[in-house]
Length: 79
Image (cartoon, one colour):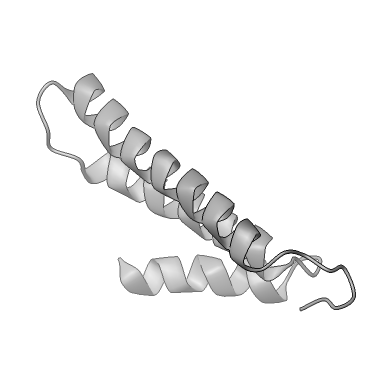
């Protein structure tokens, strides 16, 4: 499964428009969440999906806010 995710990541990285590292991170996160949702085995399934997705989304928001405060975007460089 990890090899498949790596292949999708490589296709997105090298076969499409140049995305920023932040955009690629969000795309990879969405792919990972999709895989987690398909493999989640928490009963009932709706509660499990809501729980896992909520944790991931809240973590992403907290990290985004923390990193934005710590490293403000100057706009003078790109990756």
